[in-house]
Picture 1 (cartoon, rainbow, N blue to C red):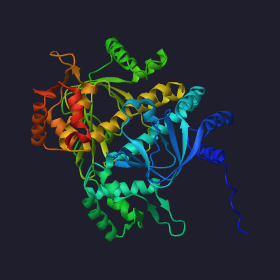
Picture 2: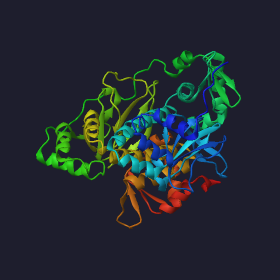
Picture 3: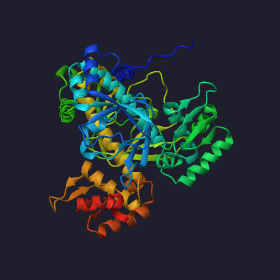
Picture 4: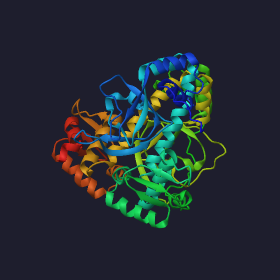
Amino acid sequence: MAKTEPRLSDKELMERTLRDMPAFAAWSSLGMSRLLAASRLQWHARGDSLSAKDRAPEVLVLVSGSVLYAEPAAKGIGAGAAWTLLGTGLLLGLPHMVALEDDLFEYFANDDVVAIHIQGHLLFELLDSDAERWRDMGHMVISQDLKQGDLTSSQMAGRLSRRLAETIEKLAASHGTPNKENGLIHLRLTQHDLAAMLRVSRQSVSKELASLSISGAIQLKYNGILVLDPLALQNIARPPPVQPATQVALRTGIGGRSAEERAFMERTLRSKRAFLPWSSSAMKRLLDSSRLERHPRGAVVWTSLSGVAEYVFFISGHASVGRVSPEGERFALLLFGPGDFSYIKQTRPTSLPTLHGSYDYIADSDVMSIHIPMTLILETLDSEPMLWKEALLMSERQHASYIQTVYRQVAGSLRQRLASTIHRLAELHGVRAEKSESATRLKVSQVSLALLLQANRQAVNKELKALATTGAIELGYNGLTVLDHGSLRRIATRSAER
C-alpha cells in the first residue's frame, strides 16, 4: 500500500512554509509560536482580493498559488491593470505597512490561493525583540525587491518579442507549475494580464505569442502558457547584446575629503532616519570610504557596467534612472532628485558586469551626490543588526513610491500620465513658489518628461499647453509651476477623461 503524507494542521502548514523562508528560518520556537498565534491561513478563489483595507495592516505569505499585483478595476470588481505576478516564497505587503496613505495596488488571486495573513504590527514587534531578525528580514526583502524590480523594468525596455519572452521565462521559473512526468512548465496567466504588464494591446501580445508558439518554445493553453523549450525561450529573451546606449564614464570626483566636506556629508546623511542611529565610529568608517561628487548635465552618475556596487545619495539636481535593453535602447524609469537614494543591494563580487539589462543614472541637470561602497553599507548593517530596521523601512517607503510613480507614467492616456507625473514629481522634488504658498515650482525639462513618458517632445508640449489652459499648471523656462494640485490630481485619475 502506498504511503500517504499525514495531513498537516493549519499551524503546522504555516510554520513549515515560513521556516522555508530565510527571514524566518532561525526564529526560536517561542517567537514562531507567537507569530503563528496572530496569523491565519485562508483560502482565496481566483479573482478575490487578498488586501484587507478594512482591517489592521497585514503582510502575506503564499502557501500555494499566485497573485496579481494590480490596480483595482474601475467598477471595483476584480483586478484592473496588472503590474506583475507574485507567488510563493515572498513576503507581500511590507511596502503598504510603511506607505498606507498611498496604497494604489491590491493583491488579486490569479488562481486558487492559500495564504498566510500575518498581523503587521505584531510582526514588527517580534522583529524588534531580536535585532538579528531585522537583519535576516532585510537581506531577504532587498533580494526580493531587486528581483521584482528587474522583472518589471525588463517588461518595459526593448522590443516586444524579446520582452514577452523574457517575462514568460522569468514568471514561469518563479511561479510556473512543472509537470513531474515530462518537465514541461505551466504558467497560468491570461493574455489580457500579459498585455497590461507589457503596456501594449492584447492583439499585439496575441500576435507575438503565436510566433513563440510556432517556434516551438511555448504552447498556448486556456488562460495560460505551457513552456515546451526553456532554452529556446531563453535564447529569444536574452539575445547577444549590442553596444549599450550609455558608455561607461570615469567618475568626476571633486578631490580629497576636507573636514568641511565630511561634516557636510554627515549632516546630509543624518537627516535621513536610516542614518540617524548610526554610531560615531560607524559613521566615521562610512565617511572614510565615501566621496562627494559633482556631475555636469549629461554625465553618467553611475552605471552597472562599471562593475562597482555603490549606494548613491542625491543631494541636489536631478538624474534619470534608466535601463538599457540588449538592443541598446534606453528606457527612462524614474527621475531621482534631492533626498532620493539608490537601493540597498546584495553584492556579488564574483559576477561580472553584463550588457544585458544594464542600469544607469544620467545627470538631467548639474548633480551633487554622495557615493558609498555598497559592501560597507551591508557590513555596517550586519555588524549592528538593529540598524537594519530604519534602513529597510526607508528603502521600502521609497520602493513603494517608485513602483507607483513608474506605473502612473505608463498607465492611461498621455494627458493622464503627464498630469500624474507632474503631480508626483512636484510632491517629491518641487519647491514652494514665490507667487503663492499653495503653488509649487518644479524644475524639469520637456525633454525629461518626454523620456519618462516614452512620448515625443511635440506631443508632450501639446499636452502641457492643454494642462495650462485648465489653470492647473503654468509653463515657464526649463520648468513649470503647479498652481492647483487638486485639479491636476483629478486630471490624472482614470475617470478624468471618461
